[in-house]
Length: 370
Image (cartoon, rainbow, N blue to C red):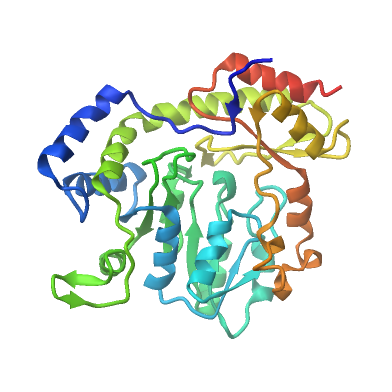
């Protein structure tokens, strides 16, 4: 057994010598935050790279999502998925908003668009879907529902950096989209995040909100928060953009190797991929079914014993957490697909510097469980 652990994901970091000139410039300028030169450059270059209208940078994806809800003045109830990271629904609670859970689709692990309308009440103000694992939601149908009922549509696109559908950015959909640049993501700035929007006036409001609500030195226009991205994060983001395409290509090579090798293993299901979608290789989720000789948790334990740090991602469901399980929509009977997926899901390691011999060792363990 190898002593070196293999993690679910590891942050890609460019060579240290490439970052040193940025560090020296920050040291020399003494501009550490408040929209410094690297922040401004990164925001503009990121906007061009992603092919979107406007980008506002944040210290974290969670702060970005909390601010997105504030920017659109969301109140009451918001329809969302139980199959996501805790930050998605925590952002609702921090804004005094009640989450209403709707079940997911088995093929994408995304919010089931055909169940959304039945969950709308007079208190519903928005829909908050998640592009889970970077798989695109059924955005056309969700937008149609939002338009019909006068709802806002905010995407948690934490997994969707660089993902396109028919050549167009997934982040261009809805009223707002949130990105995460956490260290484990496809693209990282240590910590960080962003809001993508399509209207300059709305971007201005977002930028006020992330800086305590200040419009200028003496004018406060809203009860904002300190969500600003600092110059160190922005500098790393600028450098990471130079390597982003290569990092995604390396991830996708591992994705293809897993997918080809595990396609015929009984009881192991790789999520389907749409031909219209350019993916980013952010995650490699498997569903472990009844035909497999081991349970999902037994396979999880076996891989962990081999120093392969897989994750049951997402388990448990958000709707099963203490602060949410008392909500009527959180009852497992209302969420049969999400409940089933959470019991079967296992994400394999995938990151740019994961060597192919280790990938093949993981494949061997999954393929030959006995």
